[in-house]
Length: 146
Image (cartoon, rainbow, N blue to C red; front, side, top):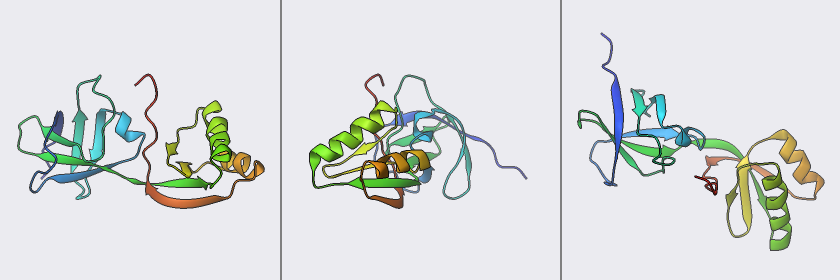
């Protein structure tokens, strides 16, 4: 017996819904408002959200077209690298070089995160940065035109 497809068609303002499903999405997947995805429980859902609503935000709740299923967006763990420095000017230079290459970065006070990329890693190491690898959620800055 096949499972009935669940179409997620609306964002709602609720933050806590009992018994909602969790939908882990990468940073890139959170920009795609349409397509088939799987919840943590292995239930397939179809994103069919109106265009123009902006990227999905972790913690955001979606509901199905029949209002029977609620799904919370979760930031999936991704392979990232961290660049850290107490010297803010040095960190600013790293952000400049990454931005110049159109690399998405997550900004923090004394560290930057980006998706693990061998070429970027070598470039940053060449500039004297120490790089650490992690598995963690990645939430890059939203672009100026989004």
